Length: 627
Image 1 (tube, rainbow, N blue to C red):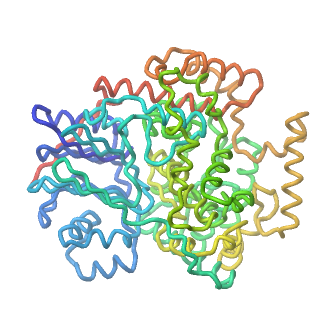
Image 2 (image 1 turned 90 degrees about the vertical axis):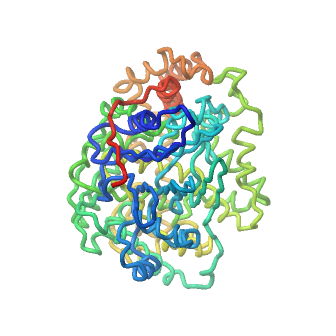
Image 3 (image 1 turned 90 degrees about the horizontal axis):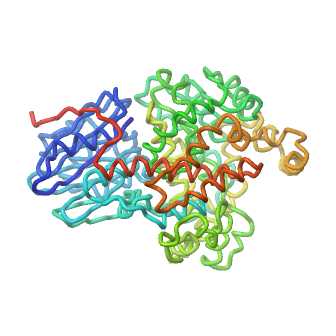
């Protein structure tokens, strides 16, 4: 596993004992890097398998007279190349950040430093902490401050272990999880512990925190008037270059390959670049994901690993998943964790297609939303779409009365706040930005964190140059895969020859055929729900959670719903959990709601341990000192 931390102590604390606690919370054992340093009143550390060969950290940088910790990597870019030419003595990524800070150029440089990273720098002389992440927050961090205690770490519960948080439940987050299967903004399940915002620079001096957002998605339609085929070509070239950047310095590249478009485009880009890859697919034996992924792998010549979905392995890994994800995603989004053994040892980095369809294909745009007369009406429509679990009026059946937050803390009200549109950007652009900065950011971050339990992860559609171009494309050209299809036609044409699990047709099929195929599949779905035939639409999903919860996964979920969970029962009623479970056994589809229940209850166990200052493992870190 990988993760970093920085904690500021108070007189009487033992910073070395605290470092032991925090390292043990992050480590699983066997990580190549598990080190800490003490620079009173601060302790900092890093746990990492070091797949990116960044070396032991924390590191004292003598030239800049700073302690530093860094996760991730900087990608090659014109900006960084020019900077390195002016600073030939600066070699590694951590030293780049440190030199920019000492030279006074860090703030203006951050928007241009292409990569996926988080770093922190500590100046022992001025007692100043400097921390920042990449534009998209690909290495999630969490922070809390209580009095003089401060903690910034890769795990929510490090703040509880350090005393920077008392570990009280965030009841608004619990309520939103139960209604929209998600959180908004920087919330976590622990009150007073928040996510480090994306594209943000933090400077902390004494007890004062100065936060600065240095970048945001800019949906100015600068490419209006450009021909669609020309835009598609430019986007394709940027995408291929993004894949090339993410494969640099890697000796064994892998791709999680589905039957959809995003991952096959990554595979096509690696084939175009001549980069050999392993591809990995898992699912039920007859699912279309596995069938079409196999076709794509054969077409582009990857070394393909096609495996049956490991439901037993999934049930066994959920405790580890709860420790890593800390209740920030539904447990039924832990699919990656259950299949890491397939990838471990074969690949050092996994390229994933997370949110490619949102970035390029307008997948979250609906005609009704685009006609919304105001941001308030748009908020109402989007909330109605995302309110897939409990209505807010039913929260009293799930949560004890005293724990239900006021209405302004619930998701319906928060959607209005987050969709406030002072910039007056267009409705489709506002919609895409809202999902990219909220649900998709969290899902991408958690997906990469779970992958990093065994291998490094890179999200190929989240490259600075690619995003700068796609956000300049007018929404009407992104809508319904307009520019996405143009990219495939002009740069990656072979991707269109392979069938697509959404329509079961080749991805290049004409629109009239696609409309017919979607209508046919909708009819199949209705028939299958009513009479159990024909079993076609159900094969579009790689997993069958509803059925498996009634057999293979039943003992595991029964334990979660029926066993006492004292730590979570202050926010989640035991009788509610049992009732939802009985509804599932009776034939109703409650899998996603059960996944939320499992996430809260499993997290409650680890939260209770953190309150008692008991970490999740007992792996001793090694102290680093100034040499």
